[in-house]
Image (cartoon, rainbow, N blue to C red; front, side, top):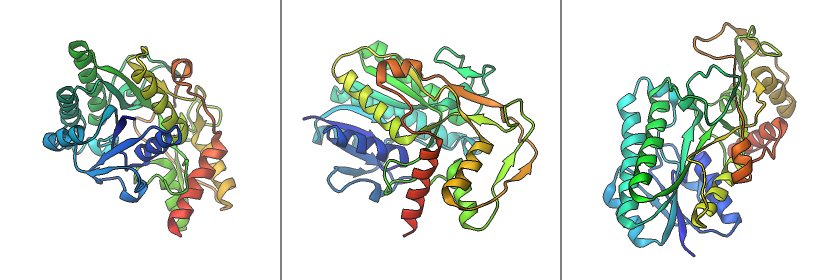
Length: 322
């Protein structure tokens, strides 16, 4: 059976995608430069290539040495806030890297691609529930780079017949395995866990938003649910089915920051009262996405509630410390 190449497959999300492929019996090959990924996230049974998608010669060798049916492209620089200070690095990794990958795919006649995009392409939408038709208006080099990636893929598809879809993630949390965990220094769950483990009190920014409890509402999705959607997308592309160019992977409802804090206290058994601070500039009251199109085409659904998201993330975090 031909394999799927997972770029960035040693990262938090990428490794979950590799595991999801394994569960349905589809082999994978992982390419990762380990700038933010971890070699131990990838099973020794999975072929692993250490290197960058910027290396065109390396990409050519990977496609030459393995029978590749398609690519799940997760590799990239994903820190939206940091991208403001490092725009050139962000564009190099996310735009030039995607361009090099598309060229290597064309040269190797590999015609299926699932792209890891982001809710950051929307910026601060002026609607409560985001759909695929909501206008894009990214507000960071990271969001812009993801939107440009979508454009590159779209235009290459027009030119070559590349079969593709882009999945726009919202807030990815939780863990599908105690051996895989989120190590981002910028994501909410790791930040809250780090504070509690260090004996510090997590902080809520803004309690006067027009939301049910006054705190920001965001769309949180479990990483294992996200990973499974990638596998369904890959299988459908390989089978010749038509998919939309983009899908939002969202819950349709969202959770507030206070709900997150309350659930963390319940799960961890650490009784704390969050510190309350003023709003941060630019934080919208609510960003929630409908996942109706993905539910129809990619078997997308929220299989994990908020408690399961927090509990699985905390269990993986504690396991990593042992």
